[in-house]
Amino acid sequence: MKTEGTVERALVDVGSAELEVFTGGVALANVPMICAAHPGEAFNAGTVELLAATAGSRVMCINLRGVGGSVSTSSQSVTLESMVEDLDAARQRIGLGPWIFWGISGGGWLAEIYGRRHPEGLAGLIVESCCLCFRERLADPLCSLSPFHPMWRPKLEAAKLLDPNSHSHSDTTGLEWLELDGVGQVLRRRGGPALLVTAGPLSADMRRVMPTLWGVDTRKWWKHVRVPTLVIAGTADPVLPIAHAKAVADQHPNSSFVAIEGAGHAPTATRNPAAGAAVRGFIEKLGRRR
Image 1 (cartoon, one colour):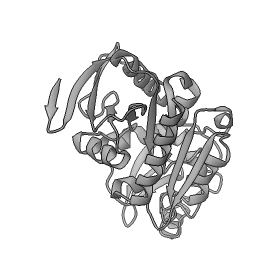
Image 2 (spheres, rainbow, N blue to C red; image 1 turned 120 degrees about the vertical axis):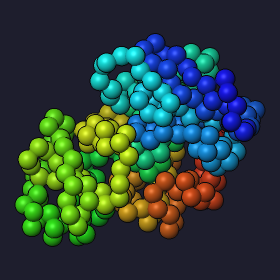
Image 3 (cartoon, one colour; image 1 turned 180 degrees about the vertical axis):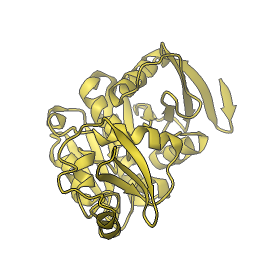
């Protein structure tokens, strides 16, 4: 184990992979460990320090296969479900009881799937700035990633890259990236219409995982998950219209919803005090149940 300042770094063997794990913060009595992970973004000591300061508790960040310093010895394709299996395997390998899983943005889908597959490994879930169905959100012109957003629509129409039926099914085969002048990076079906638009540069990891995220749809079973859940979203989030975040709470029987007034995407990333208060209140409530 290596110590980086007040944060410890280790590699955890989960069978066919070694996952990079960062741990920091102060453990509180009766409060479970908090775990955070993202499908395509590498977490580090700085992430642990941010989340630990927000939660006022001990936090463990885990990088999944092929992300950050994590490595895989298997050639099998990685899915969101297999990522969740790795996370729970890491929990057991480390010797931890049920923890709180904190999924931010794309990590929110890991949280939802974790709640379905391994509720026994969870004391609670935090779903921050995420929705139930990515393609449904991307069909919404209010979402800045949508090809139907007013920023992109005229240029995509001129390039013949718009189809009103493009978001009606979740098939992830044959997806490709296209660079379009005046727009940016466009995810589309090979030779077909645009599915997603991002003006800013994406990391290689995010470009790799985005086609997988396109197929996420938890609407059919999310209502059956019983793990206590906190849902957080910013009211001024350009990539996640607030109605899509609220649906996560509305369709979950054991959840609470906190809308952070004026906040954008992933409010905890900007150390928003209202987001911090919501997280701390949630974990303290869970602690009282133990």
